[in-house]
Image 1 (cartoon, rainbow, N blue to C red):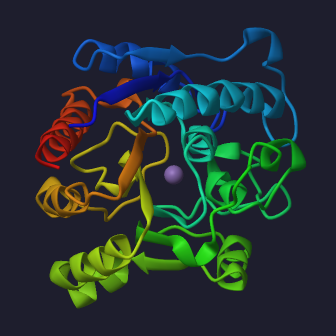
Image 2 (cartoon, rainbow, N blue to C red):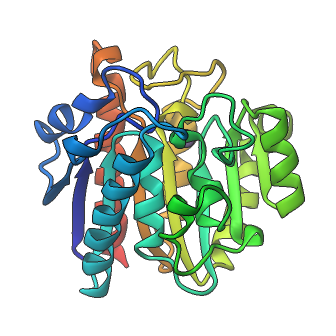
Length: 279
Ligand SMILES: [Mn+2]
């Protein structure tokens, strides 16, 4: 079986929301990390896009750490921290025909031009396709082909972002469609997509979940998944032998008083371990 390399990323500067910086400290009490990547404090300064230098530097380090693990035959499992870290977690593994399953309330396909907030955590999926600020796209050795991306759980897209996603040919399933067509339909669509991938990275944003049950996130959006819906899907996806890597992001422990979100993250990490053992 593949060894999992658990990498914690201390990062809130991609979203600039208080509390996210404590995610790894909180998670470490339940999930010991093999490696922790932190920001270079000297580089934290207000910029456009927000905290660009610090986020670039952190992703350079993360990319290296992920790539080293991957090249050793390990499975990089990255915890965070805001979603800007997916730039490093994906560029560290991406090869030709790499596919990405993106589970999120948001599209994360903004560029510094389309974004109103200028927060980099709304940009990582654009960056890994090779779009966006040159300081970010310079991390991309192998761009992910837009046709090899599927987003699910979507219920908050900016207009300009949606136009870009259409233009690039990215496919996404909104929460509205999922509710209308049913969970079985979603699972079939996801499995059709996941099975044809040569290599598959799974990016799990905790805000894909319903904040009524899982409040521990930076940018909650009403009407997400419950665990009974997402765990069976992940169980099926993570059992595929083309799974290369995963990240679990946007945990904010200061908004998780009963640790519901933390226990979900722990359950997903356990699930991955179980499924990799079977492979
Ligand atoms: Mn996200």
